[in-house]
Image: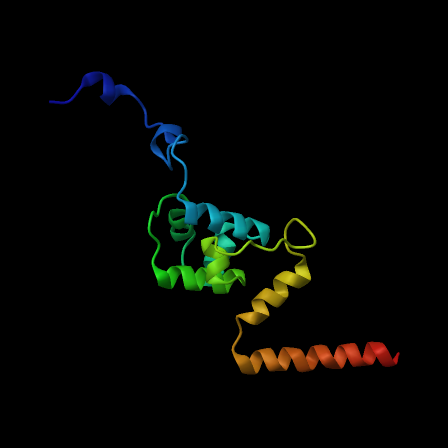
Length: 136
């Protein structure tokens, strides 16, 4: 039997979405979010680096009580930290400059994801530009 009072109430996004405010995120999720923010990345950017979805990052940051080892390893690699650091066994290092990555740093992060041959091409090009600058 349905309740007529409940049927008349509109869908409330604040009540129906996400983790309840009083429930604390799992420890791994807290660490993942802290390291991600420290690196200046959004959930979407981390998802792109890991070739997954933003929803999956959100799940691991806010709800997953027991993340898979494969996910932990991929997240650590994408965030350029050790698995031990991501799990909280080692203190995380802070960047010298707080805030989001610079445009140049973001480009280098993208270069890291290229195949080895393309990375070598970028490095040769960069070396050429730097050599010209030094001899000028």
